[in-house]
Image (tube, rainbow, N blue to C red; front, side, top):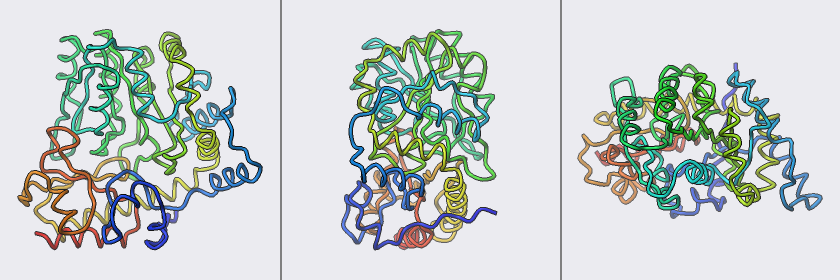
Amino acid sequence: MTVPLNALPLETLRQRSSTKWATHPDDVLPLFVAETDFPLAEPITRILTDALAIGDTGYVPPKTAYPDAFAGFAARRWGWRADPARVRTTCDVMMGVAEAIRAVAEPGEKVVVTSPVYPPFFDVHDESRTTCVDVPLRRSHEGWELDLEGIERAFANGAVAILLCNPHNPTGTAHAPEVLAELARIAERHGAIVISDEIHAPLALPGKRAFTPFLASAPEAAEVGIAIHSASKTFNLAGLKCAHFVTASDRLTALVAEIPMEVEWRTGLFGIKAGIAAYTEGDAWLDALLARLGANQALLSDLIAEHLPAATYVPGDAGFLAWIDVAALEWGDDPAAKILAEARVALNAGRSFGAPGEGFVRINFGTGPEILSEAVRRIGALS
């Protein structure tokens, strides 16, 4: 049995200078931005320490072990035979998304998003000068799913691509393989491209639906899909700046190869090094992380039932982000603002994820159970 990973103590976490811990005063418990509170995996600490010891802090070389490291990880964790020759790095996932949109869509063309969804999925259209078309997820008692009929209508009405969040942020949905396969067929029928943000892919939780790589979901997916991956969300490496494109067809590999070289040069050398360590030596640490996140998700369900019984929480399949419906508590248009002001807990405002987010908050449970318990107790005292 895997022993769950322990979070760092609160007094240690408050010494961090990253967004999660530097944004609010010390009386606030920060459970908003998607950083986690665990120590780095030992192989990552080792490779970065060794690099610092010899001043290995220069530019990324033209060839590294990173593509092979990712391909090995994908084969072990998901049974996916990704081709290392079709892996190209960039600075971070949203830079990859922006460049992929520019590669497949002309300014003014329509691109589908599926709200509630990661807020930069809306903002990226200002950068790519494309038009966002929202096709919200369908909600049921069992969770959330893609509206395939709505997506097909959007393609029929001129949308040329879709930004897929797989697994989905903020709902934690690992889209079912048959749903992804049908999305691939729909995209092929309409000549559209699926840009699949798969940053949460390694975080499928114990006992939940497994992650399915979009490119492996159906034969058609290879012809219509560009996936973007990173070790950053899983291994808490966002500040090291490394993500990568993955393709599975000659046409889309050539398209990604035409993205300007400067996009690849923006990859961080420490991101490459940390990614190699994560993908080749990080499995045991990852298994311990998933055990902790599974336990935390179950704890969060119990805490909500005890302290916020009027709220609704459908636990997701993947990740460390919980999507909580607090509309029944009648805490106004921005429940997260009230929670911050009165309970001193920082959450993400649901409305920033699109119109379906009204009345929701997003809670980051990638922390220790003591911090999570105290946060929910504070919030519950408001009701």
